[in-house]
Image 1 (cartoon, one colour):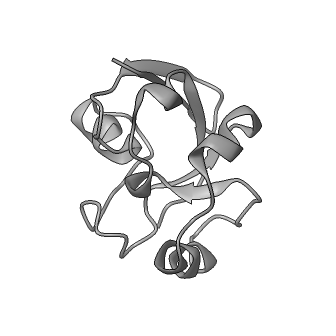
Image 2 (cartoon, one colour):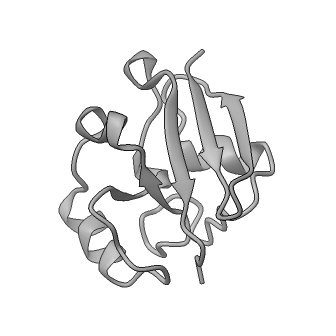
Length: 107
């Protein structure tokens, strides 16, 4: 199982096993990670699962699609170059060790 590490705005970290194909958001919600609100349940319709992907994984994760890009423009926290919606990042062996910082404001 690939691992993903979530870093809270206060610096606290939690590392979890993720199932292949589950999103970073789904893994967070299933395990009670604070800060991932996920109001829309992963439909890319709310921007309440905003994260900043660690630079080491930015190329592997890739760029947001058009809909996600539009949603990030309206996110509560300022967008950064590695901003993504965690509902749109699907875990796989290629992303083992992924590190994401949870945006300080989601709503």
